[in-house]
Image (cartoon, rainbow, N blue to C red; front, side):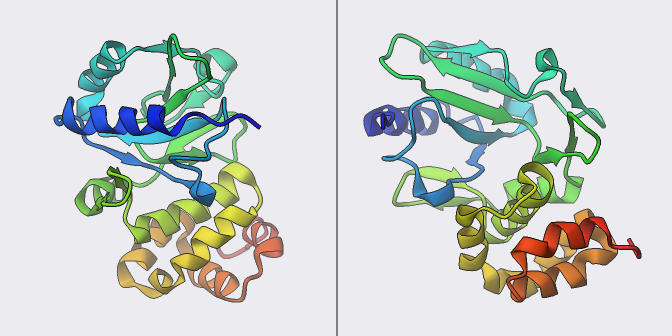
Length: 221
């Protein structure tokens, strides 16, 4: 199995942190601790970039040898971006011996239950990403705080993956204490509304295999 060289990944984040300090970003997820040493060749890194910094980020990417390519889940492949959600971008590093991709979103979002449609998460969630982002001292990159990460892992499992995969479950359970925080519950209600208390119970009971069906058949939404 081929992995993207650690030095490529570390160099990317070093440049983003030092050459382009005006660009606000967070690493959206790092499932199974793949970064920086075990990212498979051809698998992308998911970043969220503040919408106002879009042009500065694009200039940074071009300057550092990346070229924007057709997004596999973008408009050219039949996907819609609802509620004025900016389309995500897919960038590929040029002139290296591996397939190194950066997948960039400008608002935290998920797949709608409507086929091939992306929708943004509530504005308060997107605002909190920037208010509460944390600096990862070990890896030298900006990441989402534990509460927002917990929310995102749940949302992505239900709406994007349609299953709770092992790495996602591990990430959820590492942050389980956050589930009862008032701020976490506030954010969850922005997505799951009246299902939120039951969602909390289901996760605490580790009912991952039946949770999605339970959510989709919930009658008092």
